[in-house]
Length: 556
Image 1 (cartoon, rainbow, N blue to C red):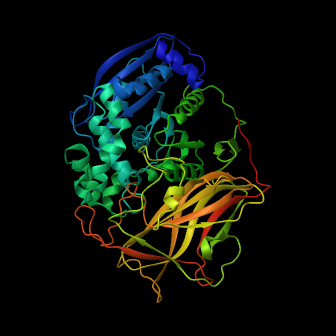
Image 2: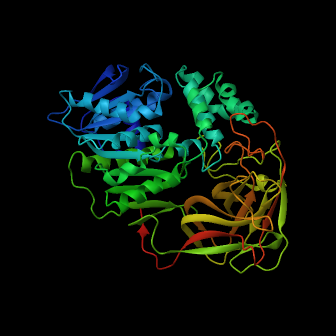
């Protein structure tokens, strides 16, 4: 046991180690079917008898610099009774070839074949890790190998397109942050930390640049072929994405899955969708969702504890807590955990909160009113403030400055007479009109405290395309904006607020209003927008409100 692992174990509140002695083999060469060799580090606990193996396949390095975290996780898991292999995926940190999302399933299978030839491997394999490490788990799981007996997946879904596009708009902030990470992560530690700390400032020229097809070069100094491919395949129905979509493997999945996510994580809806698919197929799955965003360190301790418990049951064969409900979620606003049997939770009802004139919001039916108008100018795009991203511009923040902009309209309820618990899906049902055929509508739910602070809870965006999305005879589009799910308590005395705008740049690449391709578009058109809320156009936000008799119990 190292001094770092001792302090980390105490800080993460991990169970005591089974051994303090771990042998480490560095730079093991694992040959792939095409002859490319991937490098791996092996953490071997000094324990008598056979112990299972946990595999982490990562593009972020194995040791030193920012990758110290994965070396630490390897040691912590090994000290608690597992062989641990941390492998660099192709094209990263000494592994051969070029990084390629589509090869992860093949490379994962070849790695398991290599493991099966090692004298210390006893046939029991678990996989662990967040984000891209979770994606490599889903890729491996699609092969349904008998050795693969447990998965611990954090902040990721089972298909890759959602990393690139949020529905249809490009997730620009997240993608360029990711490319910048890849370009700077193998620098010396202090330089890497500096690049991470100043990333938003360093990427500002790329965010402002047009066409978007050149922003990879502006962000990193070189053209990235994968980024160019992504922009060339905007359409969700493009067969290009089928090779990195593993949702179809879930009904036949043998490995039980432990899932950890955050309410402000970019991948949350897709992680929850995977959990629902697992449960519908009768598979063993556990779900924990906390008040975290993608780059938060706060979920790491929960991920390690949950993963160790999961592996103890499904790899080591020890009896687990059969009484614990499979779902545990954090109720923000109330700052407590809820435990339940399913997600979405039973015992909720969808309630429409209607948008009204003069910026009002309420459950009462709409009355005759004039539309609210605003102008969206892509040359001065509505900025992103907090929310879901894999950049530092994420999480729950004060939205008052954003709401003061002329290109944002807000609707606010009266002060609540009692606490309101919203647990589950959130959506906006909007009637809108635009001067352009090509435009976006962004909707956000906020909690306004008695001090006036407006805190974002969840949001979503929808895109209108000319030639596909046709308005009615009055030029009105009826759109549904699927927003991030949530579990949040609006306290008595607080107010519910809804924002409507036409962008959140650079979190989502701005809609230029021309319909030009992302790769080449540079022209910009200003959009004059209207939000209607009369009886014929009952715009509303739809909240999943928890009824008083809903099942569930307080968690720890």
